[in-house]
Image (tube, rainbow, N blue to C red; front, side, top):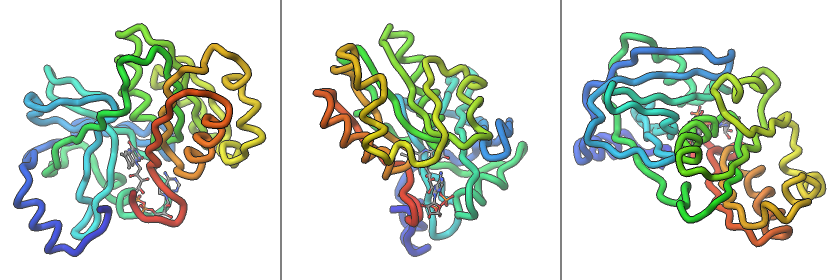
Length: 238
Ligand SMILES: Cc1cc2nc3c(=O)[nH]c(=O)nc-3n(C[C@H](O)[C@H](O)[C@H](O)COP(=O)(O)OP(=O)(O)OC[C@H]3O[C@@H](n4cnc5c(N)ncnc54)[C@H](O)[C@@H]3O)c2cc1C
């Protein structure tokens, strides 16, 4: 529920247990449109499965979701990577956060389906909003010796960011509608070989791109796909 009356979110805030004093201890502008934010607090009793996200109450009537890209329980911090785009309430809230600020935060929530431990190969698709997910996936995939590839559609100014974040096996594409073009998608090397027929596809980012990708995956392979659009053109929150 990205938007609701103030009284409703106030009531929810009273009912759910929150993390009361979380401090912003580091902020890094990875590019003019990507901001990495470190939150420090007592996260010891929490779990962070791959793709865990936090519902931030960004003003009295809006909540926006951001993925935990990295966490360190021993040192007591977690990080998110925020795509600063447009003038939405999520962007404005994240833009304002600075070192020294404290906030009251909802606990992270997990998505059980992102990491299927029985799969041997993973293809992870998304855009700037999925970089946090990509970062949360990689250590788990490497630790468990899985094969993986990232397919990322990124604005030009962000095309070197996956490398900067240490992401491996990245296929980076311009964000110009290619992933909404079925004919182009069908020709991707991944569909031209039998080697990735049984991969698990995790499709996030722009909902329209993710849906088109899933359609082609279904036509061309027997692979399992898991779709979670992170934003949809013209729709506030998701
Ligand atoms: C489970 C989950 C995890 C997510 N994790 C992250 C994350 O780690 N980092 C992150 O940056 N985002 C993440 N998102 C996406 C983020 O919640 C949305 O982008 C959200 O819409 C941003 O809110 P806003 O108030 O800035 O814009 P809104 O008010 O929600 O949207 C305003 C307009 O901008 C469009 N829009 C929204 N996002 C984008 C975008 N990225 N690019 C272009 N147009 C856009 C909308 O369609 C709408 O027309 C996640 C979403 C989900 C569901």
